[in-house]
Amino acid sequence: MGRKFNVLNHQYVPQHIRLSREEARRILGDLNISLSELPWILSSDPAARAAGAKPGDVLLIIRKSQTAGESIAFRLVIPG
Image (cartoon, rainbow, N blue to C red; front, side):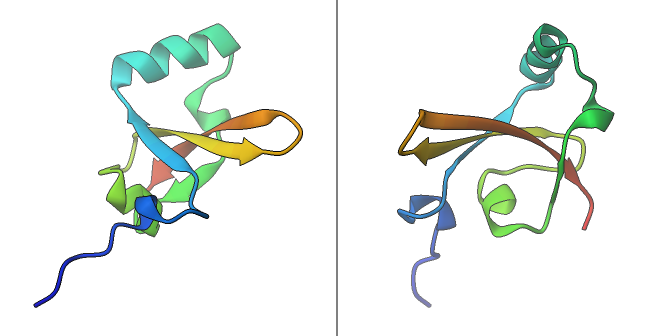
């Protein structure tokens, strides 16, 4: 059929980056937080799927902000 639509290419969807286990461990250690303290994102979320995230992965989400320039958030991917 036609081409697949990549939700990450849409102008209103923030950048989603799947971190490696080592990157996630290092960043969470620097922030002094654990995986259990992160907000969740479902593995079925279209942006998580497009980023190739699986349950247990950590996503780095970069949003554009008019006041701060960029806003950075982390999400733990859970089944669902």
